[in-house]
Image (cartoon, rainbow, N blue to C red; front, side):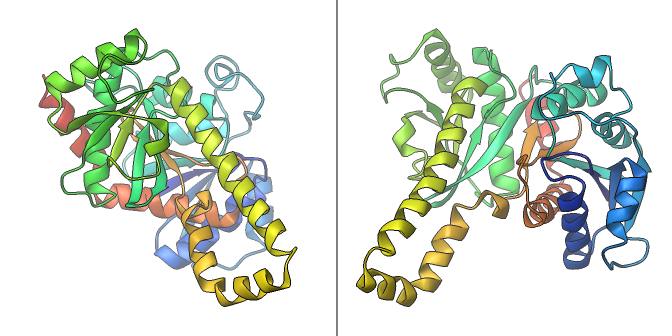
Length: 330
């Protein structure tokens, strides 16, 4: 199965995207299809060496910029790298799509081109957060900012499959992100969602407060896209700031510098655990195809790991298993 890559997506495309794709085909022994302005892609490919036949280039003349509205991909730029790449997933031999481009456009194109799987009304973006117990999978972190209680229930069921198949959690637990543990807390959405989850999802263990996202209290956390996106952005900012603050304080004291040298390997592992580039792409669950959305600032390493994550989803047959899970509820 070829993995389709949006070569024009991201702040540093196509350079970082092409470099990451080349690293991936060499390290993971996979094949990829780079979609975008072919002249630019070919120029970047000439800078690298890679196994013959491992990289295919498909021309797409239009590019959706990061600042453009999501609807432009459907209304004006039908020949964009995002649209053309999504369409390839409907053909035999193409298994997943990865983009570091405009998130809203990716969600819109996936919904329009691929459609939704039966039993899911709205797509949700999932994100792997580091925790004291390895990982916590949070969904939705930005695809659906006007969620209904039934959407939250659908996210829970898809998250359960993803955590089981990709994150190796045999019996994943699910929590609802809320302002308190009591079931009476939250807005009407959280209260109704709590009731639905309690009645329909055996893996549901109750509300989870924001300070427990990183503790690993539950394997999965569900929420609407507005709350989830704020949680994600706060977490990203906190991780970046803590690292800079720690470095600043260490540099003030010679003894601290010595301690940092002695703890270099441990500090490196800690940094690695909170580095988004290690986790690759965030899966867009609910659409009828495997779609991963990467950070707009993705480095070649992040693109490489997004391709690895896509390969894992293909190998674990995640899409088919999510479909099976949703059909069980009918």
